Length: 232
Ligand SMILES: O=c1ccn([C@@H]2O[C@H](COP(=O)(O)O)[C@@H](O)[C@H]2O)c(=O)[nH]1
Image 1 (spheres, helix red, strand yellow):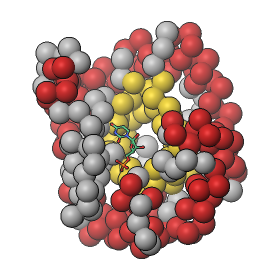
Image 2: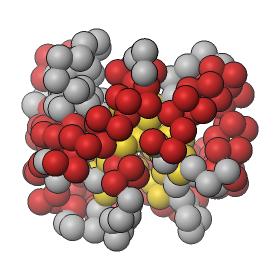
Image 3: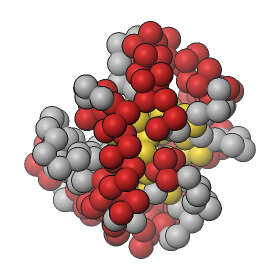
């Protein structure tokens, strides 16, 4: 995918907020400093899907982080329904059956991203969940499968970005949560990098939630993150 010329598009702000009113307030405070917003479970289950459609209608880019994973028919039809919301990205878990179904349901304009291994997982978490591979190897294997299936992009941590780029080539998208400005609380994220480190590793977009949603001045934090990536 050709890269957008607008550096603001590199930052995706995660609207992990309790309701649409709170999301509207945050988007208004950030103003034109951000162009791209992510709606995940918390807001989606509180009216966030209509809000996502509204944001898209108003010219913002939207990312539906619904992490679909179900039997193929349900995923395929779910992706078809989600296509009506005008989003740019939609996530599914990186299981081959699920990814194939998402590709069947995809329509033009909506890009499907495969979530490889959640950024809150380290090797011990992967082992506890029954995986024999270290996280880095599991991410690489899933990225390889995703590209064979025709998925548009990969969600992984920035620590795996270089290896993933080697698997998916220059045109695949790499989208990385687990991003923290230097000194910010990691919270439950375990595979963390700064915006500058992520950009230097070749990511296309970073996803940032709590460091922005919890900030006294969310617009300033968004601007600093974008500037840091520009300087990387
Ligand atoms: O592997 C993943 C996939 C998705 N996420 C989502 O990104 C944001 C990160 O929020 P922070 O507050 O910046 O930690 C959140 O919506 C997650 O659901 C992820 O973190 N890791």
